[in-house]
Image 1 (spheres, rainbow, N blue to C red):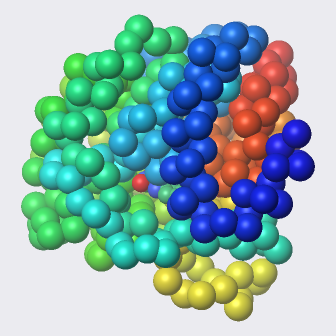
Image 2: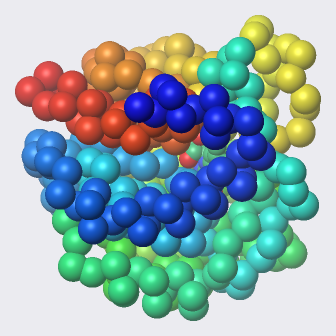
Length: 319
Ligand SMILES: Cc1cc2nc3c(=O)[nH]c(=O)nc-3n(C[C@H](O)[C@H](O)[C@H](O)COP(=O)(O)O)c2cc1C
């Protein structure tokens, strides 16, 4: 069914399709909620997840899609990135398909409605089985040295209504943000935060091995609940050589390198694997290199609404 619909959807601007799909599926929720669930409970960082598959950050920036994500079989959803104040993000168009590479390129720039609006929505979307993480962002006009204050404001506003936080220091679309991945800077940033929920760290796939090794070694001592690996890439090598430089690329080009890095580094905390998952087999490969949970964004756009249920089923009973 989705295979038939996709050429039509792919003929329209991606962000317009996204908005339309979110509205339409919300209207269809009374039907969608009857779809069968995939129960494969797993506990991580003290949180009981109904299965191992999540919707990655950036799809539901404003917490409008939690119930639909649950109905489609996701066991968790990372909303946001949320910044303290609402912000428009970069001018459109800012989301592009790269069908040859089975990828997307985006330079959204943390467009979101801000803590207050999102707080109300999170409270409306209750009760729920799906676990909700909040991807923490900083406003574009907040100086980097004050990033910790922004992250803390989002946590203070939303902790009552979520299960975990994911600290986003890895978006290529907020100027200077990735410099927070340098180990000393990161250490001092983390020391300023008082998370009321388990705190995961979302990393970029573009750091060098030394940085990953240092973060891996220290993650447990820093009190992190886990690592979310990875965000989009700013690299333009191999099959991405001819791709426009602005923005981050997601999807298939991330898969092999992410698996290799997860395998190579001794991470002292649990892993959530994300990047280039299009099939149950891709997700099982993340499990084989140590990921407890996986998340999907681009694969969902290309493969359609059946993917989360297929992936959750493939992981069930396949440790
Ligand atoms: C349009 C778009 C917006 C995104 N926004 C965010 C974001 O706000 N915060 C974040 O941590 N990751 C964001 N991401 C990255 C995804 O969460 C995910 O890490 C990345 O796309 C790799 O997974 P995938 O290959 O399954 O898409 C975004 C990705 C896309 C395509």
